[in-house]
Image (cartoon, rainbow over all chains, first blue to last red; front, side):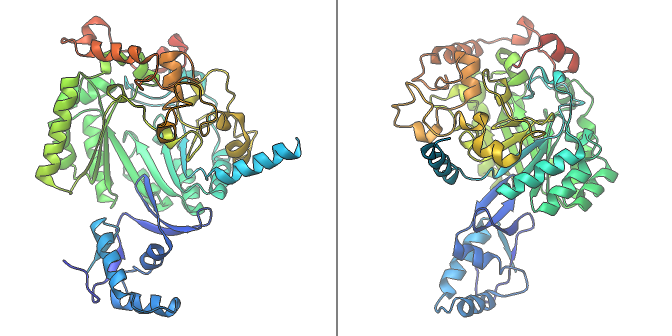
Length: 90
Length: 385
């Protein structure tokens, strides 16, 4: 299944995302492991609630950061995150 | 302290990252008697366990510094009847909580209480794939129980992480171990070759597999990966005795790992208390911040400044930080030496000798019996490894 603007990503069942003050970053936590997310990865993943489509996430990001043309970057990242099982996509 | 020394200390603290990984060894007590246990051989001397409130203090202070992954191990952590309280506090503080258990004591009532407390993950250990070998290697009758616990873990929605320590006596069963992992629907499988610390060091010559055994096991693991794809994530850890360069032990001394022993010693790794001439701080009398940034125990082997030859001029010194201090002490009798696994070490021959002995066919158990971990044996041996 390919990620499109209509896809709805949700953080994977065995993963948890949270802000870590000491690292000044969002991290993804899973059994005995952790991925420190860069800013854009963190901003995308924290919006993967299972309630918003990729289009909605792009819209929110573009408004929040006063930016344009983020759609392809978001699709690419969600696809990568899906392959890593960080997100489930429906 | 001079201004210069103070400035240096401040600079050093700025470079030292937080103790991201906190390993809470809540007890050395264990119902199993595994011959490769990494607990100190003299564990029975360290009975004065931290109280519930003392664990709360450790969790709080480490979290303030940035600890985020928290493992509960032992011994068998289920033997603490306040484990649910400790896990609940860790969860409340924002840790990702991992329970590393043999499964003994994990019944329906307690798994529900742990789930309620916010436990994120359970790693279940097996000793082998059959009842006979599992029960022989742990000197208990626990195989059937572990199978039931595996089902219980799954039924509560936890990912199944199965761990099996690999050595000379079970490495040839790798296919059936993988089959067992598949049967219990494991998502992650750790096939970790024994590391030679604690009881494993006592039994080293009986546990070290031959090169042929190792190659076969690796080949079968790779074939399994090809055949079954990504469904189970397999980790196969080679014993470092078969390497020419040492492992980057604990990802660097005092770099990300902080272990707290059952009796409250703070260590850079769970076996470091064996090292001579180093006083490790006690969480009953020191705060975690002071322990992590300022104590002699944590600063002694940080970075590369402590090294001598062949490490100090080695172009790879930043890659492996000279390997493991405990292995240097156990094999070269000098905790400041290069890890003898490294072929640049003048003591590498001692590793080679052990490896050569492991190539001799036949059953080494016939030569020397395995020594099972237990409190009586611990007091009799009365030594750290």
